[in-house]
Length: 525
Image 1: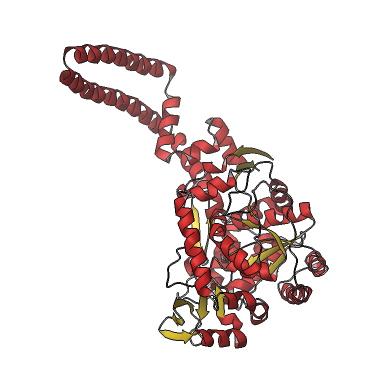
Image 2 (image 1 turned 90 degrees about the vertical axis):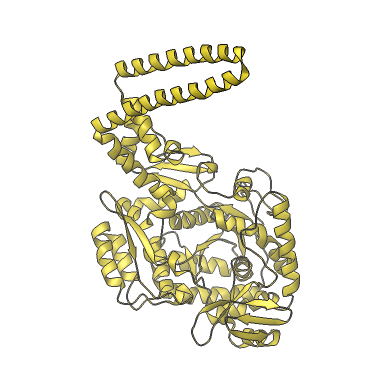
């Protein structure tokens, strides 16, 4: 295995805020209190009673997920005072895309480096089923999307049972992955009677059993009861928190950034789970009156719900990390680009509610290059940045032009150079005669140069048609490395690589999660 290191900006569609943070050696204040290059984080103090109760809940929960001795030992260390390195994401089908592994591997590596314990927070309360109900797995010459059809009803995804529709998807996964430990783990976790949360937790626990990854689903009553002070803070001084967030949004805009989460005067930091339908509804606030769907609530009503059924109050994307770090002694959080951008707003909530801000560290960002793909890259002298910065048709033109026989290249170069030289001399003379005539000459010369470039493209296209393998190779490169013009880590299912590369794959990822390359890695398997 070897790697190539690229700046993180090689990836498309990253926010300027994230790029400025990720590429800075100093904290991007006041939005972040630490640099991504930091290695030492001060463990937060935590109420011993909360730590003990959380440890009890984690032990019981992880036993139901099938945790083994390494995980239970880490929970015991947490109980005794060890800090945590935390990461997390929404629960998804069959483990979701590659970045699931990258997040967990980074948390495990940072925990190992600092003496902390790694914890994976399941965002089971999210209600965006479209992000969770599918996985993309490679077939021979295409990517296949396996999707579990469910009625979208705004319920928290983690609570939705998989149902009998999971069986045909397991059959498809078996065809694509082949027999082996990974398929066995998926089949054991994703049973019809399991929920999205239970299945995802079981699979993640199985994959990282040797590393002792602790998995937490904090959506239940007991966790929400422990985190009630955070939820109460989002209700009682809601106006003050709203004001602070509006000021932060204004500051972000003044610095040339934009707020990742829109904060409006009528919004709040909470969702309410409807007791009749189970739907997760946004709570909106106007003065002391609150609404969720078609129902109205007073502040006293919400506080009564918090006291009796705290699991019905669900934090939004900005409050969720604060809720998380009230429950856990988080020394650092491992996040993706969007999560890290959220933290620029959440920071004011950390200050107001916890009186401290958790450092946030970028997860491992990587493109995995399999041996057959590496051979194609080498044969055409193409690198990862060529793929990420070019449309397939553009790269095809380049490779087609490169494959033109030497004699053809010489003729095209000779004709192009001669045309350019003569046109330059002619247009200069016509400019001297008359400026208007010179401008007309420039237009005509530009059209002639365009036609010369068209001749080059025609020659390159002919070469592509003659050497059909060139286009097949280009399509294969994009399919594997940049599918549908999106980073591989966000599209292709982690299960595919786990199935192909076996037991040694996870330790290799953990090794690669060190920060010697702070940007994006090409990892050649």
